[in-house]
Length: 479
Image (cartoon, rainbow, N blue to C red):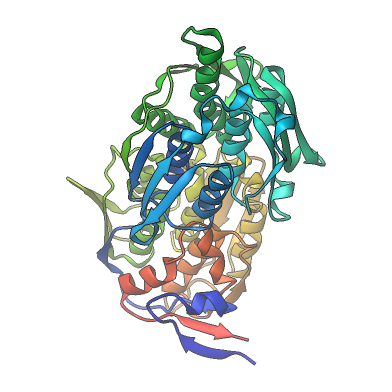
């Protein structure tokens, strides 16, 4: 038998509750500043952690994904002190000086647990293979089903040593036995995840430093992407973070490249330097609060983000504007107001982490919404096309799956003003499923979200922040 409780503001109920239900109400109005970007935090940790000297990172995100990155770097010898409730990080990477000059047999294998963090396993695989050493990266069962073969294939020709994906179909665990790279041009596929390219890019200054130490001459390394490259804004983000830590990055795209051609070329010179680095709020997290305004016809301001932000997901506001919302830009904020009244046909390749958010907004629009360009979403924390479609259908929507996305057609609106049905929704231990699907409860009673604690992967305080924004408590069910 379930027992309903009201969540305390500190989010502790989410750690033990099996279900949460966001309660319907009027238009959502308010202002919020989300926590720091997960994507930028883990990139900054790689750059700072692989840099001799002391770096200071502010505005960092405290979450499972960043915690496993910090833990892994610490196990590799990086000194990291965490302050201000996890938002300030002091990082000293002196341990990497001349690391690859010793042979891998001189050190025991260091086992690293990376949970289900795609950024951690992909960024560390590239970085540690460049730095040299003996490591095994392993995670939860779902991580051992997520492909990393394209990255392994890219690293093999430049690897001095061995690099192996131990699960079937080129999936983690990953075993690294490395003495660094040989400096040759690297080629990688980009159709599954841009994180492969980002990981290689961030590893290049590490390898260049090792090669310069060995040869006495400055080194540059080139990476070429073969075929389609998904999520380009995340690659631009990587380049910007690297530049802030002293690397010289030349990045060019060829939008006319064939499936077998070179669609992007990156040439990287120089080594990392210790830096003071500030992280902006998470734009993917902000999408849920902008969506709350779009679903209810309210007005929500997100502070700390503008259209010039490093993160491409601020483009979600432009998508909402196409659906009928109004976008207002301040000097340090973006505001969405009004209801998303009409379905659209939209390519979400560049902002694929907001597809689930858009899907819930589409449930309350007039007419179907077609999402294109996100075939790679099937390889995320869960199948974010097939599993998303399953849950949306429970709410009464018609959902047609396509090779590169899905079409969402909401059911006809009832006399009560709601078009959906009450439902208990699975999250598949995917943080974005939980956060996005919970928004349906802003207008439809009886929408219950299973495993709410899975938001800890990137946003532990999500339900507390949403509760504060909407001004009414959620309902938590404890079995």
